[in-house]
Structure formats: C-alpha cells, structure tokens
Length: 495
Image (cartoon, rainbow, N blue to C red; front, side, top):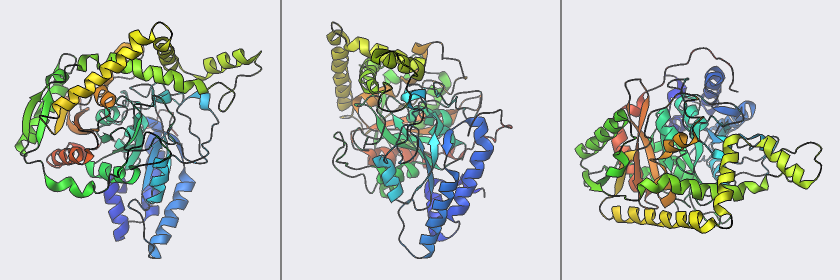
C-alpha cells in the first residue's frame, strides 16, 4: 500500500503500532510533494529538512517509550495566513513579502503539542479573498481531479494538497466558505467550527467577526481528531469561547437513527447545477435510509446572504488591512516623497486587484452618509438570518444543502466577473454569518468526473452532532475513498 493513501488517524495508529515510522511516512509525503506539486501548486513553501528531523525525533521518543500526543509524528500543512514561528506568513500577498512570524498561532501551537509535524505552508487567495485560489501572488493552484480547473478557495492549497495525497490533513480558514467550498470541489472533507470554537490568535485577520480556523482531511474521523486538538478556549483571543471539544471522535459511531435532517428549499433554487442537486438529494435520501427523519425547513433571508456578507466582510477587511502601510513590516515602496506617497505606492504595488476592490467597497460602506444605509442594515439582516437558523433548528438537528452550486469550474472562467465569482459561495455564506458549525463531505461526482459536496450545518457548538451525522453518511458511501488520477508531467510552477 502507498503510505500516502493513509488518512490522518490511520497514519497515527500505524505509527503507534509500529507498522510505519514517522520518518518513512513523512519521507513518502515529501516525495509525493516533489513529484506532483509542480503540477498542482498547492504549497508555497515546504519544510523538508526540518520535517524529516522532526520525524526522526518523534521515532526516537516513541522507541524510548515516551508518551506521545494524538498526532505524534504525523505531518500536516497550514495555510499561508496562519503564523508558525520563524517562518514566513505571507497571505499569498506581495505586501507581506519577507515577513516572518515571530510566534506560533494557537492552532499551530496545539498541533505541535499533540506531536504533529508542520510539513509546509499552502497556497491561498490573497488575504483569503477569493473562491478559486487564482488571486495568489504565488501563482494559481490547480484541482487534482482536473488541473485545468480551480480547487476552490480561499483554502484551495490546503484542499488540493489533501486531495492529491501530499499530506493527510491541513489547516484552512473559513470566512464565507473558504474551507467548505474547496473541500467540496476537491473531493475531501472540511469543517468550519462554530465561531469562537478555535482561537484566532496568530491568524492574519480578514474579517474578524467571521474568520475561523478549521481542518481539511480525507475523513470525518480525521476532522474530529483535529478539532479536538486545535479547539478550546484561549485567553489570547477575546472572541474565544469557553469549553472544550474533547471526545468528538469517540461519539462518531452512534449512528443517526431518529436524527432530524432539515432540507431548506432556498438552497435548491435556480443557480444550483442539476447534477449537484441530484447528488445532494440522493445523499439526503441515503441519510433517511440510515434512520434519519427528513423534514422541510425555511431560511427565508437566504437570498440576502451574498449582499450581506460582501458588506460586513469588506467593511471589516478595510479596517484590518489598514495596517499594511510600508512602515511596520512587509513591503515598503522605494524612495517615497513623503508619508502619503509611501502609503499609496506601497499599497498600489503590494495588493492585488481583488483585495483593492474589497478594501474600496468596505471603506465606502463605512463612510459618512452610507454607514447606516449599508453597514448597519447588513448587520440587521445578519441578525435576521441567525434567527432563521434558530427557528429552523427548532424542527431539525442538522440542515443539509449543497456545499457549492456547481462542481469545479475552469481556470480563468470567472476572474473577469467578480459577481459571478462571489456567487460561488452562495451556499456557504449563511452559516458563516450565523456563526454556526458546518461541514462538507463528498457526496458524488458529475458526469465529467468532478466531485460534489454535501454541506451539513448544526446549532452553535454542536459539532458532535454535526460530525456524527457526516460520519454516518460517509461510512455508508465510498465517495471519500476515491483518489484523483496521478497528474501528467509538470508544466512548471509549484514548490
């Protein structure tokens, strides 16, 4: 068996049982990266020598009988906007060229404490602003199922790396769907935890009331294991919630007999591809066969989700990105005439078109005379959407929808039309605005051989119920076991 076919929990169990060493497994992942990443461009940097040294050290500790963490000796990757001490954290943007993180993000700190090995940093849309990983200053990432198509975004590098068997799991971030949508397009599993469940300390901010760190892997059990490791309260993050997500993996096998699955008609309207709709409807039927009760629910403010999100998120982005001025860190324009010239030229040279677009939109909706008409109204609609979910969860335990309205689209297909690109997240934005947990798992393939994702959502902090439902469906199907074909020889790019 190819070691890279092992999932995260399978690799961890094999190492504990002596079936494979950490060095053997890590070396297999690095060799896989060397062979296929020049095609896919999932990584922006690989820590090869450091990872092998850490793997040898993990094997030595295991041989000495020292207790290891849940992920002892297992390599994982992290998205380029999550800080790892002594390493670059570039957010795939020129404006952060040369910036080295002075500390570990809490999520990375907890991965290390569990014994995980950080294999490298993955590509993303610049500052997590995108749905296709085409806005990166480090080049595009390609979908392992079809290199002429996008992997989704903004965590496209993390999803592609996991789907391509370069690494068993990776951390991504989700602001409006940036874990779930690429997971769906790449045929892997991705989890956006409840807002506050995972600390944002050490995450470079895009939209602070929406951003969440979460895992991408090839099985729901892996997601549960990772959330147990990275989740929990952190005093360094003022939005961090109390409580700990421990014991999630132990509750996965309870089945879904009697679980109520809500199906909202608003998510199956015009704009959802017919093949996607058919796969998701079949998935709901499969959950019914497993003993779940299927009920109709309403989420009436869903049609306003995209407009609301692109006001709230851009307003917060315009504030958060004001710190990139050429004075403190990162890129600095050469020979400025004065301070305003330094600011203007640094941002003009360092930020890409999509980031500039969102900063301008956010600044506009926060400006005098427009704040109440746009930003304040968007916050009110966000509250109405949260109430929609509260009412719906009075009738069901989880809500099932498509993760994305279409399968992976062609590279360059939507870059000239921002609104069309924004609609790629139409199915995921609502959960982000409401702050509830949501997961995507593979649920089928189109006639063209492209993956389709099923999205499940649950009440705040009920990741246990969410993961149990997703696991039951996953174990009753084989979509998650399918592997993309090995790519043709590299065409350039990658690490």
